[in-house]
Length: 47
Figure 1 (cartoon, rainbow, N blue to C red):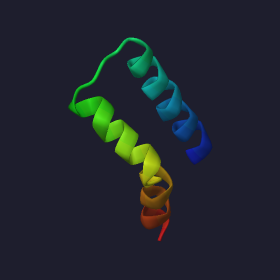
Figure 2 (figure 1 turned 180 degrees about the horizontal axis):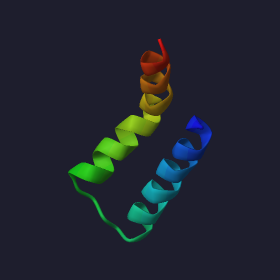
Figure 3 (figure 1 turned 45 degrees about the vertical axis):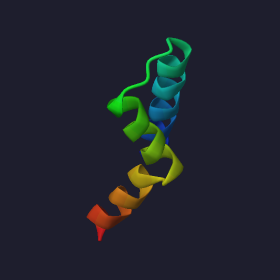
Figure 4 (figure 1 turned 90 degrees about the vertical axis):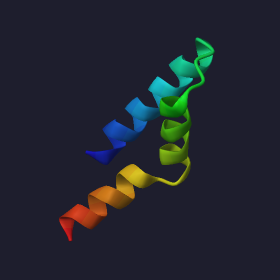
């Protein structure tokens, strides 16, 4: 489940960089990917 979300985030960030879009959303997305927040949040929710 989380792998699909992680792949989607990486693809979205690649598209944003390709279109030279730099804003708060792209910076937050990059931070999320670097810190592996999707997986950490998922584990936290599962308990």
